[in-house]
Length: 230
Image: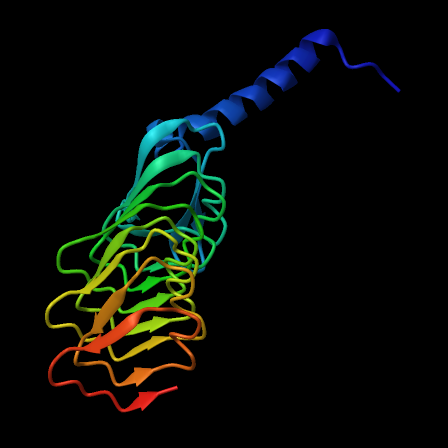
């Protein structure tokens, strides 16, 4: 077998290195330290992941890039080493475990968000945008360190063990004009510091054992339309 000359080998290595550098310098958001924003030809979306070496108190992820939708894939933000995450307009869903095992203490959500899954981080502050379009919360705040939360009036369903193991929680407020129709599941309010809660009059169903093993006093807004307590 013939030996490859040193000069040819150097050229090959240089070309390979150049290609690698070219790909990285074309990262659409190099300053925001995204590992990739990968175009998916089938659904025309970009999937985003934050680099593991990111060290910052704040990071902003736009909801669109060049007019194309950006999505946060499940687990793609796991281990996020920043404290505050802000999502730009355009995001419609945060899936359960999307920000699993991160250092987040604050998350700022866009008005476009419609579904909020289980954050599963020691979050202390959740900021909903004015005129939020959020409709469904599933387990959302379970295991967090929030003390107070204002639920947007657009929310129609709060499912799962939404406030379980939130030992610092003292206040849950529903915006005036709430459209909430259904709430809870077994032990949804277990292990909180919440003394009482007033459900909006729009609530028609409280699911199975929602307030089991909790000392929360339950009140209803005047004109309650409640039909079922599981």
